[in-house]
Length: 334
Image 1 (cartoon, rainbow, N blue to C red):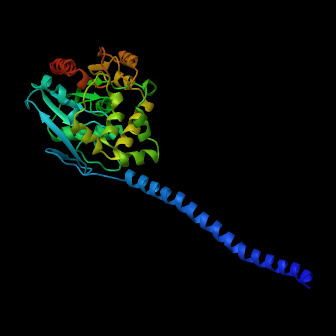
Image 2: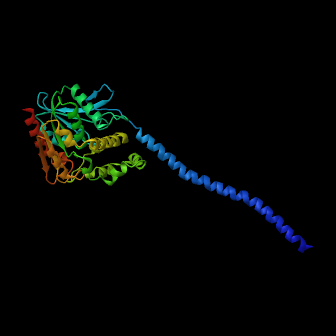
Image 3: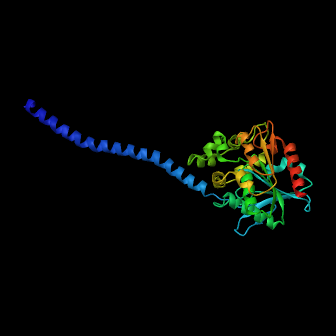
């Protein structure tokens, strides 16, 4: 009897085991699936939230002298020197501010110097939109009108040179002469950005790095702006930290679009303006040889500074200041 009943009992137990093990296996697989979804999904949601949050961040303007424009933007500026002297307008580059001109101010002390924080930079307002080069230029022109500047030598560093050029295109009545400092003449003359700088413009990764940015990361991103060993003052690092991600990337994109549309020497060639071009022979962002493109501009004077990089105001302030002073005085007498 035992021999006949044992196989049946085994079959009964096997069916019972299979019945109970199937739900157990399903539950284990379902649990693993939920854990996987949480592991992947939660970081993805957080990254998406961070991307949207960082891209939509704005900031209000502050500072001693703010000019409120008809569009509602508040623009910060600094004025130095005798009010009745020839006027020089200084426009900083991408991620710069009025502070980037501090080293050359002693050479310009007998001139009226107006420094403007472009929208999204320094202590000017930082909205989500409005960063096209032509928009920057129109805004600068409106600010100068507000403070009573009727005629000026306009100086731009790097991207600020594109803004100065656009202002000259729009306001030939206002711009008496133009000086460009290490302003790339065409897009294919661009060399490279730092590794940190490239990552900053990578979608999702850039927004995350922006959220986690530190002073050391900012200094690394700015490293290609210098060739000589110079120390970037802490307040200038604070200015960059105070930018929004949108104001940085949108201005960079606008600068690229402006150069794609038409090279700067070709824009200047038809304006019949006195022009000074200062370029560092060791610029690490733009091909130094591309400065020769400006020979196509009538009345252009090109000054190549040996051993100097992308930011002559810091690397050779005395030489740069003297060149700007001489040019402004000379053009004011015409």
